[in-house]
Length: 298
Image 1 (cartoon, rainbow, N blue to C red):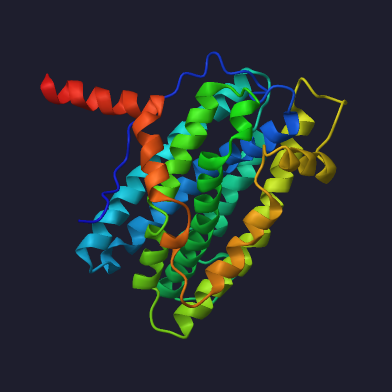
Image 2 (tube, rainbow, N blue to C red):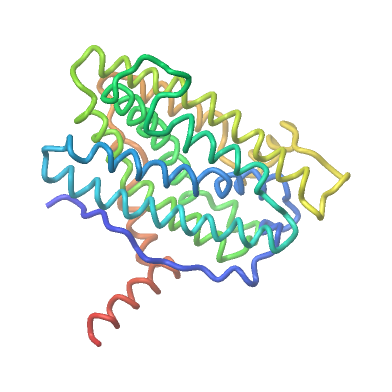
């Protein structure tokens, strides 16, 4: 029997989390914080697109996995949105940036092609599924990295934020194949299906790079504790990479040629056993499981 993918109804208490949750590391803090800028709208969009595609799914096991994926992504969106509220309470308003992210996902990548592009509804849906599969390649790599890195633990980060990141990262590894399998199932015949998969990555990689750089720049520029004292720079970013506080460029970039191989499948990424092991020890995931157990006994 294959691994069952299901949402965990977690919650996090942000009252004690400082603005710089990695002490004395504002660049690493805010580069990782870009996740909170992108994921509330991005993962809501994943769910919307998958809802559109559900009628095309004829495989019962894939349908089960897709529904589990959708539940997990919806939960991720909500939990990262709570972090944005916490940042605003600490004087860092993310609204001017996230409005652009909302426009990207809700309008440019909405139900109809933008700018009158002459694409059928089916082809537009397939293209968006290809984008999600490409994005999920990076989230699986990031998820595996955050589960493996020991440097974050040594940096004495806020434990609640670290648990959020590792809970989310573990679920990304857990469902790492679902978006790819969904695209392959709904993407039509080759060679068009493979060509669209390549196009999805060629669009996704530079756009994500741009959004991440702009997001880190925005957060550092508007951080009330850093006003006028520093700005985002590649030098500071690379210094955080060298400390192990951020994933390396080779690790991120290497995900692209792997994905472009015709024979590739995301089950090759990360370690499911490592992800599941963390989910059994995550304070938030354990609390959610215990709450379900108490409810069942009531």
